[in-house]
Length: 361
Image 1 (tube, helix red, strand yellow):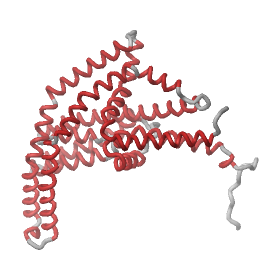
Image 2: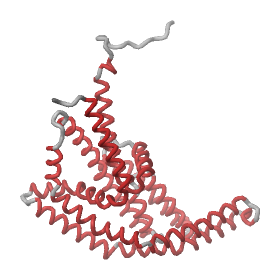
Image 3: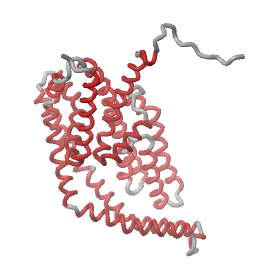
Image 4: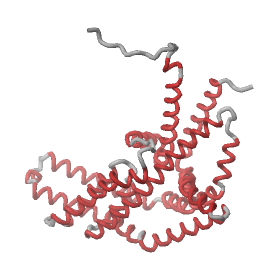
């Protein structure tokens, strides 16, 4: 005897509540597993394509792992040392940059010399806050044994988890499919395919966009001669998946550094600004439409809201899970709206379509 729909809905709500409570309670413990699952999900189509060429699943996973190790080793030898050195130099020169900013404002805004000036007091307060809190936070983060252990755990556990999940991905999907409630299995499969299409299109498309733009920003800023150009480009590319945030943050940071480094050389400053203008034009008119497409179904406002909401509720782990959860919620919401439009609640009981009421003349 099948369970009533209301009873089934109650069990599904309980399962959803348990899932979110577990996500909040486990916190950082499940972060390596979420990252490993994301890597396996990202690489599963590559493994499937290698399998179609005649290789076994184990051989396909081994080939992907070997390629990943080679790429990581290449990055570790060529890019990471420069990136780390520039990041350390940026932290070391931050106080000097702030002093230069203070001198610049004092020179061009004489009212800054007034001891009672509101702008001067605000700038001094900001500087003291950065010096006390920022340095304290950085020292604590670098000296924390827990932070170091977490980094080690990430670099060790994430590849292992990704390897085993990638190897058993098809078996896990088949096992989950066998556990679906039989009455609703076709509907759940349909929703899962839509979620996979939305999520795959967004993650793989935006991942490619972030990689292309990050490489472009880093190389272009380094060619212009901007100090810390590699760090700025990496940061701008990394957060490009948040609409406009990558360009605004990266552009503001790059132009701010360019003002101190190239003050008076307006051509170099203009080149730095032009790099981000060109990047935004290429992203908006070519990269995002071609690689992500308009049918993904993740509206920028919905994505920003999901990142903010899940980040506030569950911290960094919530931000990692925000994109897949936003994709799933969006697909389910569209499915429910479509069902609502087909229901008698929307159409009513009348056999004739409703007519619009016109104003009396």
